[in-house]
Length: 420
Image (cartoon, rainbow, N blue to C red; front, side, top):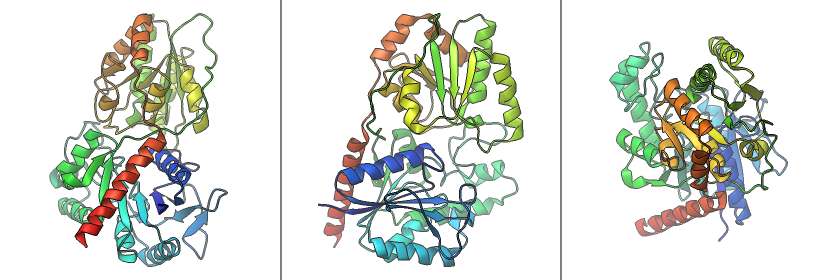
């Protein structure tokens, strides 16, 4: 039976091509391919769009079923809308006009923690599913669960620990923040985590264990890739794909590359991605590291999402050196789909996707020497690269993910019927 499904995310992939926005948009199209009526709602702010007087909404795309919610007044601490008077009435009007049977929420940022409550109040019978992509509700430090300054991994949140990270915020406000968010999230019917690791973090934080399912993210279908140009001398090629920022571990990777160059290891590293919204200090740091490792390390800049298949196919191995608890990086799935081994940090969801010495190599996070040693092994042992490539684990396709979500939604409908 066809359903009306509203998919909501904290931005649109054409404005901000992050992993959450990309997956939410892919799933939106998968629902439509299966015969459901879809509406994609992406929230944005002045970084990507200017406000338009008279409405909270802006059009995007060519099909008429994708809109933006302009969210220029947002409290990032409580993850709440400041201009509730203007935003709520417009969101309610949208809900009453589209009348979704299902709302599939992918983030609270910019949309607001009030969003599921607004849906429940406006459409009491609507089923609400929320995919948990990161730790924003748990951690005020941009959802990283990494301590500012020291970059120490944080294993659990509490008012005392959070106040230690943000001395200017009173301790009791962190307790209020958690109470505020958990109360508003109580209106969600089911949560979904792409990894077991992230699911456990939310259970420890306070969400009901029985309310969180695990459904891996899937990849959309795309044409078979064509491998790009290879080095004439047969050197092994490594690739990095994604934004350049401290948490993705790019300084760790460049320092590892510098050590390998000093040791005389023969390889090539292609760094694909831009560095938007980064500090001058960080940009100066990576500029220095790129200069010290050229031409072995090639800074290739941003790329289009539709090019990722060909870019991954053109390398022998993908490196994902993140120093935070990544949940389900799309770049690991892209590499495994192309039969490419991955070197990654042995934490979070990354350690679920890559098993050491099986389909890749895992290393401690934020350890340039350990990362250099792993890259050295793959550079100098072609048989190891071949064996790990042969063990690549093909990820689910996006339609499989959509079917699993629809099964979960049907179970919610049964639960509602039994409760009635």
